[in-house]
Length: 251
Ligand code: PEP
Image (cartoon, rainbow, N blue to C red):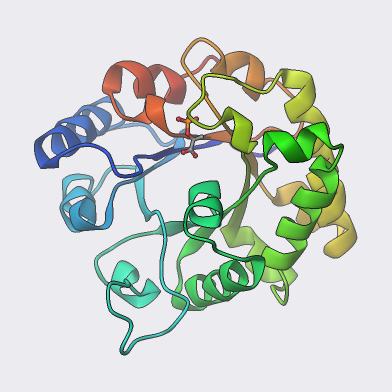
């Protein structure tokens, strides 16, 4: 039985005050709970303070990106080791905004995955098709290439520290949510790919999150779908009013 893993991706939103208010609300609600696996992923500049604010809480802290290189002359980049150093637990890699706005390729995402894992960070690896790709019947081919490319050279033991997030690009920030059937089909397909690439028992342990306009009023039906093991949440992760009911969805 996989414990659902729910993570909030703040993207480039919130200011310091709003960030600290949000994590204070999360901290208070989850002070004595060990039955929830949840994370927040603030912008880089707020990470250290959020880590401190959540110290001793079960809520984990992740970054939204990291550099593929270890250290050196990479102006504007942040290394996996720096994230680990300040107390981050995980990093989101291959988010569609990184792929489509900043041109990240599967090869680059794969190098980042290796760097993050070698540094001791857990990874949320995002995959997902655009509307054009879905309409052209290419959903499986696209997510297959992203999954296989992103995990190239990753061994089965490391998969304990990897979560896959299926995020159809057409559902991110648009209010258009995948139907439970659409999500279920792709999640089952991804699970099958993981089984082929690793083994049935390793694939059975990997959590596959759904992401794309998850809200308090649709989280329950999405999480009820076989092979959907949590959510990566953008807009609705920015306020306690939305994020708390998502974290506490009726399991
Ligand atoms: C995301 O940023 O990964 C995301 C799924 O965003 P939203 O929930 O706003 O669609």
